[in-house]
Length: 336
Image (cartoon, rainbow, N blue to C red):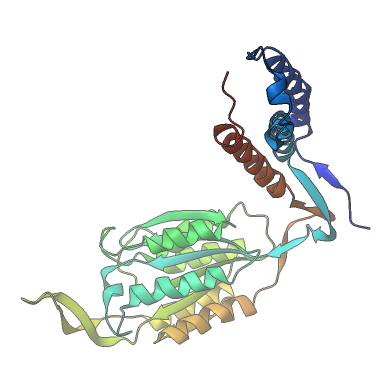
């Protein structure tokens, strides 16, 4: 036997009291309607009553039915699903620190640059998450929180889509980025907390050294997973455009420090990965998740789920109201 529907907004059912008032008003209007009197009314009587005469009283009923359907739709009938939703949600608190320095414009990931690939892969990574809270810290010469820990992946992907280089002062403040990320995780009650650092260079800016930040992470028991993006050495780098608007590329030396990335990961109990192509970056992010322990963000038993059932009533209300207006304006039109 299917479950009985319930109303999420039952106080709206008081609107059904309007139905008798509408019917009484229609009856009074019909009684007060003007009539034409003929001295030879028997001539018209011989012709009998047409179908229109019998259908005319149905117009108030159509209006009343439309009101009933509208009130039921506003009351939001819901059917209880036989399935039960588990409220015990497992997840990880993850803060991603993403490098926005100008070196991320290097074209060794052609046909796209490092920045484009990092944003694309990071969006894919977020789209595959279910219960993990994710925050975003961006950095160049300084570090800023772009998005706090959230489960709203749609908003987070839109934030990533808007990221650009050359917005922050240039440089690579890895230590400041890690310290800002740890600050976002400091009050987290999740059992598994992690920082994912995505950068393509060496630390050359900021007020906090990377190893000092690593020591902070160690004391907070937050592992840092480092992903070094790019091939290193001389790589194609944009140097402006030519007369036809095409990007001019020039081989430029961009320093990297894989030893620093390895030391940060080792000090905090994380892992170090090297991504020289988009697939390497995807694999690195996946390995981060594979190595983490799940923790419960919310405790609870079970909760029933409901399906909205107001749509048929809403369509019926619009349909009945439209039919009544159409009949009144055409076939059932009354001339006083």
